[in-house]
Structures are given as structure tokens and as C-alpha cells.
Amino acid sequence: MKIKINEKPFLSEGRHVVTITEVEEGKSENKNIPFINLRLENEEGFINQRFYLSEPGQPILAAFLKACGLEGNEVDTKELKNKMVSVEVGERTYEDAEGKEKTIQQATHFQPVGEAQTTNRI
View 1 (cartoon, rainbow, N blue to C red):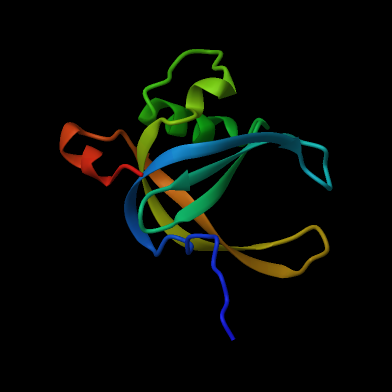
View 2 (cartoon, rainbow, N blue to C red):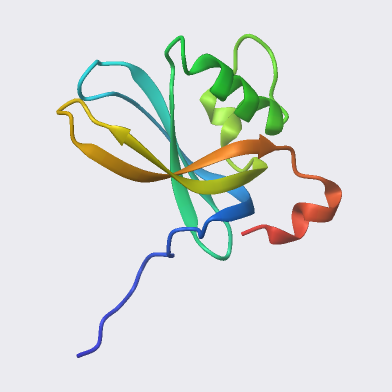
């Protein structure tokens, strides 16, 4: 049997220079909290990272935007597409709304991309 793969693998754990290739807006299923979901990718693979637009999520989003070179009190999500950023990919375990333990892959420890790191573009 032949199978066709139309998708990259998930990024492995560790630091990666990625490009934001997709930006989606939405609301959480349980608490109706607005979020932006970003697809971060390079030649090796991708990760989807969701940023909640809640009070606790503000410092995390601010750190990400700063690493992307976007600062200020208001940012248009359209400005995020094609920005490059360095992220650390790792796993996080949490309890969902139903009390079940879930483990997800996430991007953290955001850093700006230096001139020497721009070779990992997609």
C-alpha cells in the first residue's frame, strides 16, 4: 500500500527558529476566552501555539510579541504572519476542564531572531 503524507512532523523538543505561517482567531470551548492560534514552522516541522487573550495570558503574549519585534499596547494579528522568532519546544501536562490529565507540546522561552539565525527560514 502506498500512502501520501501532506504534512510536516511536529517539531522535536529543543530550540528552533520558526516562521509564523498561519494566524487564526477564536474562543475557548469552555470559558469563551478569546485566543489567537499560530502555526510556527521551519523545514523540520511545525507546532501550533495558542495564546489566550486573558489577564493571566498577557505577559506570555507580550514576551512573544516582543521577540517578534512587535511592541506597544495594540498589535494587529495580521502583522504576525511571516515574522520569525526563536522558540523552545517542550511538553506541558495539565488538567482539563473535566479533570483529565493532558500533555501537549508548546512553544516557550521566546527570543528574537538574530542575523546569524535567519538561515532556518521555510
